[in-house]
Image 1: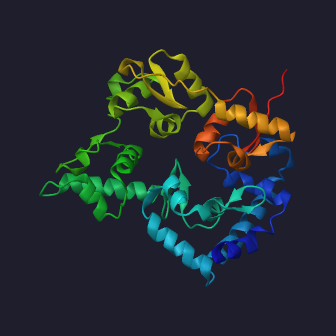
Image 2: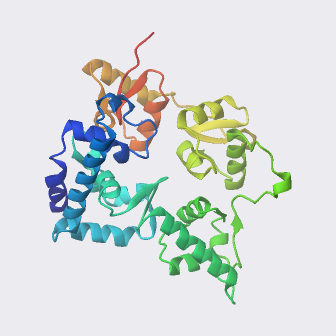
Image 3: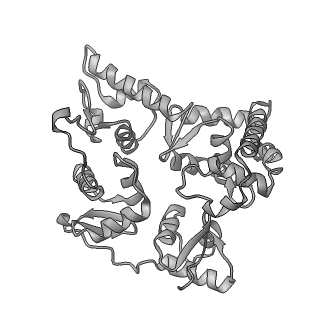
Length: 335
């Protein structure tokens, strides 16, 4: 692809030492990303210089007349104002192509240093997430003040949102509003707030626990949710591993699929698959190779199909494996 070739003319010059400085922004969405790389970080002044220089080069490449500029223009038009990152990557798999060895993908460079779009909380937005949220709140305000009741989906479409019903529900929740798929297409004068304001006199110093919030979310949704979807829709941010462990330990919940939880009161059958079977196969591959393996290499060599995110979740949940670099796994050493 010509656009990627133009981008790589910039990214191929990045050295290992420079990557150590750039990693803070490239993996800004991953908790504890590249912590193992910290000992190689240059000083703050040098790090700032590396980031500024690289950003200038990427932006110049994006603005230069050519295939990359045209591709980025089309991406902005397709994303604006917001689109789920996973849908964007499905439509444009070349965005997930590594442009800095070993595994820095094109979307990370374009979003973190190219200013093409912003990625946060599982969404891609143009020009940024704050602007997309502001546009949503403007649409809701228009719904409230309209002389004639209109459907939220209709009003949001006029503001440029081209999302499925499921995506609209998730996006509205992210923006602080609550609506069911059916309510999206009903004439309404407004939307409920996702989180009701608590009067100052009745506030307490401690809010609901993480598991209480998940129980409330599942009750409102009415169907099982994947752990990543749960984390995205909670009002507070929780670390993935601890939240996974809390849900497994709480008798109010049952796991009905890998990393997917439901309320035990729904009486759904619990997940009967071999726990960590994909992770076990990955561990065997790593042991056979005698070296850590990248997520994509593991996925390519597994005997059955599995989504990239599903495999990542399985590997992260395995007690036999440990992440030794972004998306790269090795065997956990016994104490």
